[in-house]
Image (cartoon, rainbow, N blue to C red):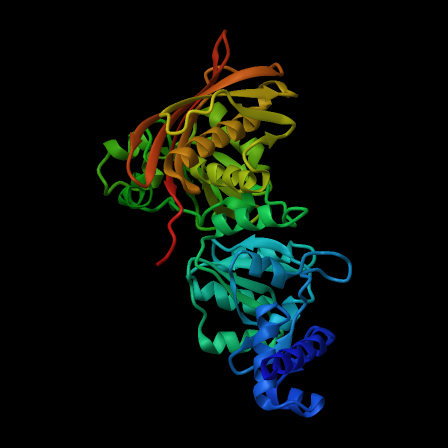
Length: 442
């Protein structure tokens, strides 16, 4: 009978906790005094409430009531519930996260200036997903945005204290950003509040400068890793304005002590893009001109560098949201389900066409087929490491097309896939994509 009485008392205390407002503090001594129970009963009641998701306990901050429903008063999924659904641990700001809706996501994979500019261009609140980049942790805190540390990254104690003082929420997860985006998107009833990341500015890398008075040795230092026979790179003057270009074949053939100004040609128009250009149009331009990368400019001169690898990252980001099935009213279907097959065929139903400028649609479909095939073979989510594209013929009509995917090389954690989009008449796009599994930090 004594056990029944204790259980009844605990249930009574838990019901009291459930009536508290989110953010209210809960303590053993306070419950004991308020409800006239022993501190032992109060302690067991808090543990029971914690098991039910009514409260959360944080070091140095104590126990607080949280929103068990995981939605705001307007019906939006809360940041706290979204983080909890993917197993992220709250380091600070639990009570605030329980009241605020899940904000738009910003993935911090550039430099500090780029992250600040991206945050400034967002409307509403922002959740910054950032890995082991301590300098970007500080930028995000100073910008006043909530943070999700990815890949097992840790935040400095002093910075965490600053975030808590500013009322920011900080979560931590062992998963990488791409995996978390996919998990969140699947768990949210309406999908993630996606921030549009559609311009070159959102995806470009830091610029690789070749100054007009640099020696050829600088070309070897900056560009050998992405060398292609037909490639050329921009040369800038002291004000970062593009004043010429040097092609790979020339740079490889002359002595490394020669200055860029002695061998550069006129700037190649197709090798230079504005940072406000859309990524779909960029993909079309690069594939059409058979280029692997381009210099990015703004009104202040050369501001970045972008490659086909960045285009693949862009499409992977979109696929994470769209679940690899439907793009711009086009549908991708697997022709036959043969688990483990190293050759696969898909049917691509393209509902609309924009003549010779729609390469972005079938690049997206090619990437989708690759991701689908790779997931089947490797059994895990994958990242696109790099890729090349070649368009033998323009696709000018909507209709039904076939996409083939074949394994060219395979290891335990990576694949090299050769893909082609074609019909009975001709080939429209060929691609070689390298993918690897998303690694979880132990």
